[in-house]
Structure formats: structure tokens, C-alpha cells
Length: 163
Image 1 (cartoon, helix red, strand yellow):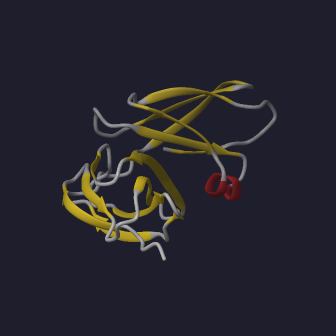
Image 2 (cartoon, rainbow, N blue to C red; image 1 turned 60 degrees about the vertical axis):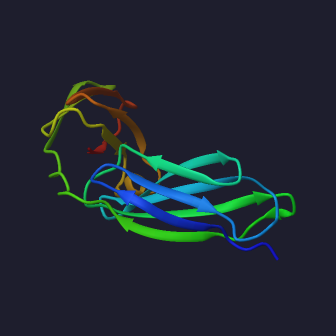
């Protein structure tokens, strides 16, 4: 039986988490698949996937949000197949940034100018859809470090925007 990998949180800060991965077996490991999950806006779960080569590994994941719960799951790729999943939870330190204040203005039938307030030197995610259900299940999205962006949309539709 292949055991799950051991995930050990080495350190964390307001914008990063460092963790190590190892196996407690003599089975040859070729690498790991790691997923980092967090909940966006209390409804939408986001995920980042890392493919890691090698047997032992220390990883640092950066560009995270302060005071946010993260779940890290991992499984090992071995010569005998994939291991079961292993999970750890960690909350980044610091103070969570305030939600930006968004303004959306139609420029014409297919373009909407979105602008918002918030701190500089961070990455903003802009999500949009034609219904609340679509906004939380599968919105269109993009990212930017700016405080405004022009979104191209379909004509004759009403849209909801979230930043």
C-alpha cells in the first residue's frame, strides 16, 4: 500500500506559505501534485496547482492574501502508482485587505469600463457573468495590477461584475 505524503508547513507570512513534502516509504517517488485551495468572496473556491518533480521537496507559494485560510492537498507519483491524498490547513498572517469599491460604466454596447479603489502593487481579479449563479460557478475572469480595465462583453446582455 502506498501511504499519503507528509505535508509539513515550514513557515508562513501574510503573502506566502513554505511547506515540505516527503514520503515515509521506500517506494521510489518521481514527483508530487499539489493543489492550493482558498475561498474567494465566501462563495467561489479558487485553486492553484503545482507539479513538482523529485522525491523530497520544499516549496514556497507566494502572491497569497493576508489572513486567508488555505488548504494544501498533495499526492505522490510513484513507480507503483499515485498515493492517496494528504491535506493540511493554514491561515496566512497579517490583516486581510479591505474589499475594493467597484464602479462599472458602459462605454458602448460591447465594452464596460471597470474602475476600483484599493492598495497599489497587488493583483486584482475581475469576475463577470450574466447571472449570480454563473458569477459563482463559472464566471469570465481576468487579472490586472491596475485600478481599471475595459471588459469586452456580448451586446444585449446585462452583466454582474466583481473585483
